[in-house]
Length: 270
Image (spheres, rainbow, N blue to C red):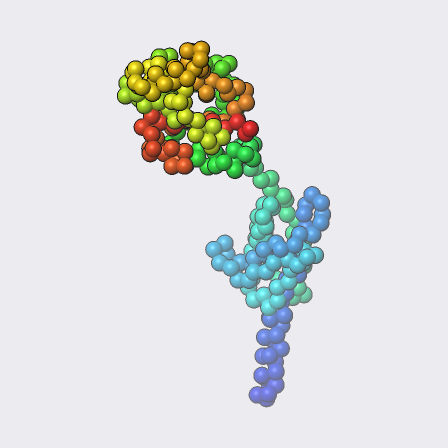
């Protein structure tokens, strides 16, 4: 009978225990199409599909290393963005206590949904004047030069009257929004930020025979009513128009709340 001292028994147990702890897994991960190593691949050692025993990431050369592997019949699984997951089942540490394994991953194709990018080329002067900001934040109708190409009329009278809700009153020589025609409240026009008072050029109907109307006629040596000043604008020179059918909708700096007849702002950039 072989008798072991307590010290010898402890040493033997230590050697046996260390042999268990010495079991290692050495591996490398490649791209199957290029045969190049893959960095930062997540490698999982799993005793079963729903449990994880150890986890590591591959180094810049695609290497990974697990020490002290103490399970049998285990699973190795890899995960990496752009590659299909790889699952290798029923692995065991061989008698040499070292499992060497090479893993080749297949790239996964990432299909992106179609993306439509819409951009708008902004006019610097209109942008500085706040046109685009008001178009996004205020109730009104906004037309750019491109929009106006589709509007009938090759003169200002034709252009304005073709826009919904604007009417020219020949007797007064003034432009109105339909809703304000009966109360005699004409549109308040601003051209490049400057008020253009069309009432100063009104016809005989202004004031219905008032002294003001008589003065206008008497100061005109030809006795004729000059065109409304808005009509001197060339529609082709217009960069943008802002239309506010109610003065309550218009910005305060452009007559907002100051005139019941509504506001039109014309931008020419001149």
